[in-house]
Image 1 (cartoon, rainbow, N blue to C red):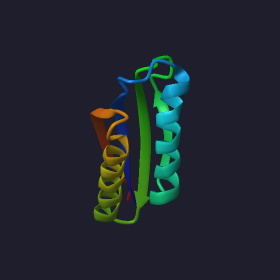
Image 2: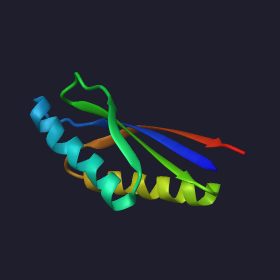
Image 3: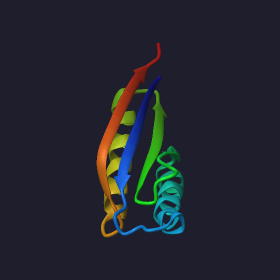
Image 4: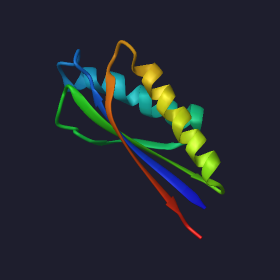
Length: 98
């Protein structure tokens, strides 16, 4: 079994309130969950109005599938954020359990 965990740091320059930030981050997290079937959540920078951290994870029998889904989720997040925000960092961790 392989898990790929990704932590995205997102800059949201047009956000000036937590409500505006939630309007960007909540739909992203929900779409990652429903469209790509990954586990996703806002995991950090909750006190900041202009930035967020979103983490997601993929579990699969084989590494190639886990990596492919994680990369697809990353591309989806980049596309979703066009005009809303920008991914400024992505930390990726892969764990293989035997």
